[in-house]
Image (cartoon, rainbow, N blue to C red; front, side, top):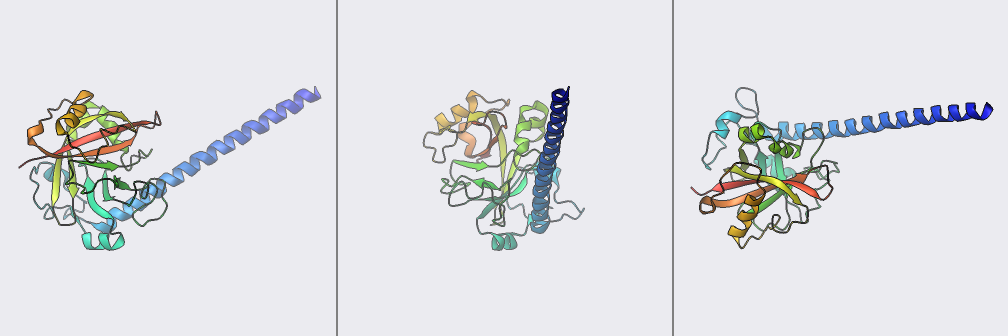
Length: 259
């Protein structure tokens, strides 16, 4: 009886300890995600000029503007001078209208530099949105590869997973790339699929055979889109983890069409 009572007490203590640890882990994760939210909210408030209606953008008017001309006259403007003074590694600002994807884009000397660092170079679990360090001329190379984490609170590139849903994909077809020279490049999404993290063809930043590259985009494309090689000037490849298989990635491809 005494041994049984001791065992019962031990099990109770163990369960309380497990419960306590679980609560602590949930609290820690929630705290970390709130920190990410606050930091990027601060960045947006500090470097985006508010629109006349008090919003940071006019998603409908921007998405319906198919030109690649200077878009700094719209409700969406960026304080480039202040942003570049904060960190000269900023190359652009990425925005997908109707989503939370609304971030500065950086490029480090290596592709690990901003994996866990924010705009201010401080450690942050969510890191930054960043361009592959092997891209010699980002947004001029035929394939510019951009990475972002798949966070649990819909920050960074987590919403790429929503392109598995037909309605979401149809409603969010544009990717806007704002650049420090005041121009805005309007890309149209053409392909979405999963790849292995070591897929050298999809992550190739020096594409020589454009036909072969686009054929890969067509092979497992989950979107009903036509990929017309003759009208494509360049591609951006957005990549994030699936949070399932550790070696698997979601990749979203968007094309800049020739004028």
